[in-house]
Every structure is written in C-alpha cells, then in structure tokens.
Amino acid sequence: PVNRAWWKESNVYQIYPASFKDSNGDGIGDIPGIVSELDYIAGLGVDIVWLCPCYKSPQVDMGYDISDYKDIYEKYGTLSDIDELASGLHKRGLKFVMDLVVNHTSDQHAWFQSAISSKDSEYRDWYIWKKPKYDSDGTRLPPNNWLSFFGGSAWEYDAESDEYYLHLFAKEQPDLNWENPRVRAAVHDIMRFWLDRGVDGFRMDVINFISKDPAMPHAPITNPSSKYQRGDMYFSTGPRLHEYLQELGQILKEYDAFSVGEMPCVFDPSEIIKAVGFSRKELSMIFQFEIVDLDHGSTGKYTPRSWALTELKKIVNKWQTFMEMNDGWNALYLENHDQARSVSRFASDAPAVRKVAAKMLATFLGFQSGTIFVYEGQELGLANVPTAWGVDKYRDLESLNNYYENAAAGASKEELDSILAEMQKKARDNARVPMQWDSSDNAGFSTVTPWMDVNEDYKEWNARSQENDPSSVYAHWQSVFGLRREFKDVFVYGKFILLDPLNESVFAYKRVYESTEALIVTSFKDSEVKWTVPSEYVNAGKMLLTNYDRRELTGEIVLRPFEALVWLVQ
Ligand code: TEU
Ligand code: CA
Image (cartoon, rainbow, N blue to C red; front, side):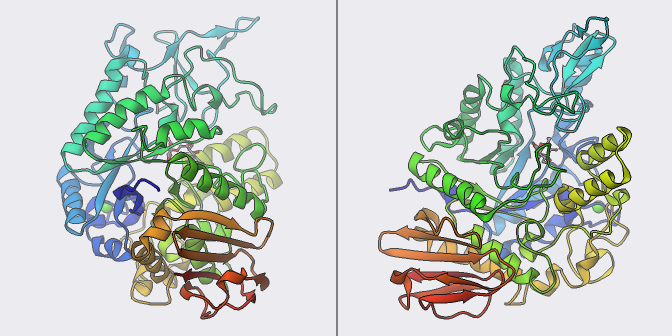
C-alpha cells in the first residue's frame, strides 16, 4: 500500500507575477493583482498556489536573479502585500508556495557585491572563483569550457582580482558556493524566514545544481560547432547533493512544508529516487524534463525534432511505474514559465480543435499518478504567440541571446527565419505573455500597454468567458480536480497501467485500486481513429468525463479528433 500524504492529494496552480494581473496601471503584473483574482483561482479546485520569484531583483532573468531574499520587487508590491496574498489563500483553504532560487544570486546581491570588491572579503568564498588558464600563445582562457545555459562561457573574468567566477546562467547570476557552510546556513535562514511568515513550502530552482565536482573538469565535446560545451555531468548530481538536500529536508520536515525541486539534466533515476523517496526526507517531488525536451533538436531547443507518441508513452510509463515501485512521487506538468503552451506543442491550436485538444491534454495528464501542476492560462487552453510575431516582440534573454548569437555568427536570413519559427514553437516567451482575463483592451490584464504584447486571440480566449461556461476548458479542469478529490483512492493512490503501448494515435491507461478501475483514453490525432475497448470495460461502468458527448463504451469505438474519456468501473 502506498504511503498517504496531504501533498500527494494536492494540485498546484502556478503564477508568473509579471504576467498575471496589473492592478496599478504600470503595465506589469503585481501582487495586489493576484489578490484580486483569488476566487478565480480557488474556483478551479486547486489546493496550492506557487508564485514565481517576487523578490527584490534587477530582473535580468525575470526575478530568477535575486538581490534581496527577504524583500519584494517594488513593482510587484511589498511584504505586506505578500502577507495579504498568503492570508487570502489560507482563508480559502489553499496553501502558498514560493520560489526558492539559491543555486545563484543576482550580481547585485550584497553578498556578491562584497565578494567581488576584494579577495579578502568575508563573502569572497560564498561564490566560485578560479584562476585563468592560458593557451600556448598566451591567450587568457576561462578555467574550463563549460557553456552557460544562456549562451557563451559559464565563467566571467574579473580583471581586478584576475579570477573568473562561475555562472551557470547569465553573468548577472553568479553561482553560490555551497561547499561553504555559511552559505548553507544563509539558505536555511531564508527558508525559515518565509516559513515563519506563513509560507507553506517551496519550489526550488535548479536545486540539483548546488553541488559541483570540485575539480571542475573540462566537458567532453558534444557540439563540435560550439566553443563551449554542456558541463552538466559535473554539476547535475554533484558529490554532495544529497547531503545538502538532507539538510534542507530537515527544515521542511520541521514545518511539514511542501517541496518540489526543479531538476534539469538528470538522466539517472536512482539519483532522483534519493531525492524523493518517501523515507529519505529530502524533497516531496521533483520536476524532470523528459517530456518537455521531447521536441528539442540535436543541438538544443531551437532546432526542430519530431517525436512519436510511443516515445511519450515510454517516458510516462517509466516514471509512473518507477515512482510506484520505489515509493517516490511524481510532479506532473506540461507547462510552466519556461515552456511553450501545451495545446500548441503537444496537440493542436487549430481553431476547429483547440478546445477539445486542450481538454484532451488535461485528461491525459490529470489522471496520472502524481501532483498536477497547471500554469496560468493552461486552464483556459491558451496557445502560443502568433506565428506572425517578429523577433522584436520577444523579451526573454534565453531566446534572444540565442537568436542574436546566431545572427552575429553570420546566420543566413533562412537560418534566422527557421530559428524564429522554433522560437514560436518553444520559446519561454510563449508562456510569459499577459494572462487573458476578458475581451476588453489589453485582455483585461492592464489599463495600459503591457510589458509584453498580449496574444491577439484574447477576445475569444479569456477567463471571464470560460469560468461560468460548463463546456469550457476551465470547466473541464474543474472536473479533473473534482474527480481526483471524489475518487481519491483510485486517482491519487491507484496503480498506473499503460495500455496499448505501440499505438501511435491513442494514449490509453488505467488506474486500479482494489476493485475500482478507471480507464483513461486520449486520442492525440486530429482525425478519427478506431480503438478497441478492453472487453472488461464494455458496457460495465460509467462515464466520468468526456470532451465530446460520449455516454457508452462499446467494443469498437471511433474516437473523434483529440477525443478523451474517463470511464469508471466499481
Ligand atoms: O530553469 C532552469 C533551466 O534549466 C532553464 O535553463 C531551462 O532549462 C530553460 O528555461 C528551458 O528553456 C530555472 C527557471 O525555471 C528559469 O526560469 C530560470 O531562468 C533558470 O532556472 C535560472 O534561474
Ligand atoms: Ca503593476
């Protein structure tokens, strides 16, 4: 029998503060804006709200560069606004989770300012400094060939001290040195500060990167056309990772707090189970990246890759059965602030099918074993930005750096157009356009032109037109969360069994708990497809959810484009 826990029975709604709702007409979302929509969020039927970073920050990477962990970015509001948000959620029976970004700080953080000011600073060793290397003709080189996630070298030279510091992300995001116990104590102090204030837990940014191989070896050449190479094998599950996570886990346990760790670049499940195994007391769950990396090409996300449904089945089946066998827990997501819109990416946003397709994906994800994460706008079936958008409308440093690096390297007009086409499919910008509230100007997000353009489809696709419409995507998600609650034994704690593993059109699975069985059938095809219902389900059971109007299950059925259904046998 599976261990039960409140966080296994909870589902999460993720908010990106800059893009959720602007309350004071400066074109930027803010905390009072979020507070004004708490009934909308609670109405969806989620249990937890995760807010992306809202701390003081120069905003080089949209707040993932923090300059003060105990204060709020002035454009988002104040500490008392955060208290109001937390208490508004608590009053509605929801929990409040914040983003903890402690692999790195902003270069404007007082710790780094002191560290870079002098080699003798007591904060010098809070970051990772190394001497230059020199090649045969005396040219100065970074300590190793690691590539930054945002392009270029992962090392920045400081002429003053003749040393480089490590930054796995932007140069304005220096990596903290977790080997230093004072750094770890400072992180623990930040956690306690927010937990004591009433926060219920954390989403932990790239938490698997905190321990680096101290030798900092050269990375093997995986992309011969690049000067710098992926070094993640030396920091994605470093030697002291679990020691550090155990320390964090102690604090989380003390407060019975929620935790989800973001863990890119981990390919060894045994490392993941060490982090999320029920008896290990590290984290509740982690985000793995296999699904959202499915369409990344051989040299990264801005090159195309087509994928087969059977690949998705392998990934889902692997993690579903792995967590069950090893007493771990899944964090399930198709979208977040770093990912494009799922309906555009994994199904279709063509007008004729967009609504059923969004409901199909909700059904596909929503009945698996794990905690479900929904990103703002996903509950409405919001789609990627228009294909007509030029590069000038994009705002994210990751997509822009990549585009302009290629331009500077002499990419042709055709090559740049193809990069832009991949941006429209996969750039983080797709998730960051303003939330679509109503059909008024600026999608009801703001009274003025927002910091990033709204998607032109807002007149038809918005919250106010869906929240009271029983046939809407929003209502479908409400049903998903309602059913998970009503049939908790089977949908939260039931065993997952993949059906029809070789079918390239239909993703079907069942969930089983004692004598209760649920059959979930989802078509990923934009045309009709025949499917044979397993005989034990034919005419024995009831329809819990459909995105068309199907009532019965006969032996041979014809699924319509992106049809989805949930059938229960008790
Ligand atoms: O993302 C971690 C990460 O690995 C990203 O580089 C991710 O792979 C990329 O966005 C996919 O295109 C986290 C945050 O979620 C992201 O918003 C931050 O930019 C990043 O860490 C640095 O803090
Ligand atoms: Ca504002």
